Image (tube, rainbow, N blue to C red; front, side, top):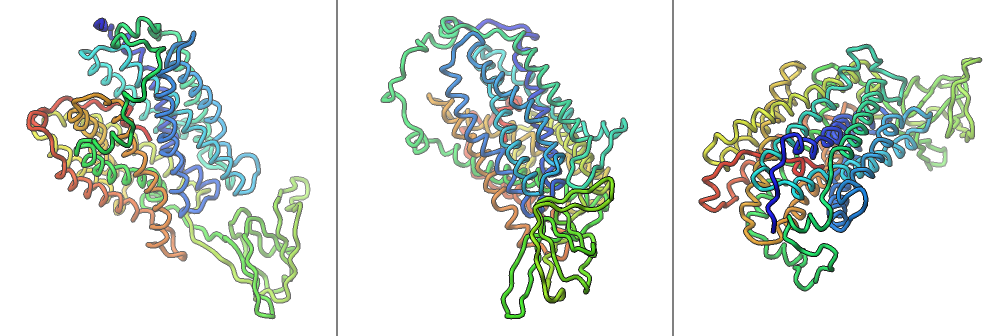
Length: 549
């Protein structure tokens, strides 16, 4: 097997530069998804369910793209065709997602459109992300991989910071940070537009600058195997067999991963609501989720209150928002699928309406819930500030990654980092000063740095035989599965600890996230490393492979 040649710094840079654009897209998604769906009218108790899609797409897409790209050879290369496909779809969907509330759709339709856009966006981000990880493995020799991953890590964090601060900067230069009910503000919409443009430029740059090796040359540098020959399945153990024979480290590190990624799923879901209520005094509003009409014969019927208008305008419920109360003289409800405002007469016009006659207005009971007012200036200022806090987390992660190699005991630094992150999470539930929150998110950055550096380092050091690639693919499940479980459990936990007459206690969910990280720190004690490995403290390489959803 021929030795891979040394590459110049700029060739290494070019191999990963496209990751800058991909990470901007990922940062915009992770910091704005909860804000977008809350603005569209989603119940805070349902927010965690929307976060099932990102890890689920990562779980499904990354192994498929990796496997397919191993067998792809065409005029564009081996990995780059998947970058092209992923980036093009991502650019299109990034223009769709923040506009889900701009077409006058009902709440349920707008949320459905947003969900479809989110699914496509996350799928395409994963498709565009994979080639850059694989190109380093394909074309960089062992001596230079540390530098290559460091460059990739730098571009990853730089893209994250840029994506996080976009809404704040656009507000600063004068774009509107509030919008009509159910419509996402201009600052968020144009942040996605700019992010899409940067991603497109990064893709074009990568296609111009990256020249993949042809199959024959690739084979010479990577073992000399005939890449066109079929693989004998008898010589390749199945995944079940590999899991049965997996080293104990695989499972103990995976246990720590569970509590870590469960925790960060809660952060992405509930930070917006926590910061809006605690640090920005966001006002609350009473929303109507439905009505029940009690009939004289004792029967009753419940209706969802998406659009309800009483003929004398004494009560208007638009997109679930209670504007006025029921008047005692009203005898008819109009349930409608479409309600528009006539600019000439100033009247509300209801189409495709269903009339509901009631004998006694007092027989109607409203099902209400108290929520943060997502149309308010305070909520949207908080949404921008969340991006700044996430940027502080990214900066804290970079700085702490420099400190980590200085610890002689890797497990101690791993556990300490998670404890610091846990303190950061718990403190967000109590801090009301927006600037003091910098400390909280810098501490969370410590946990993030360790989560990117140590799990894959510890695992790969325990894999001394073949099938390392397959094990790493399986280990990616310890990132995605905890997030899926957290997304499914989040709404149930929030309902359990909350009260319908009060704003959902999203701050408590952040405290739970902190407790989860501390439990993860305790589980670090179960990890057993080989003495020679445990004594080493290689420089952490926060590769984007470990920053997936």
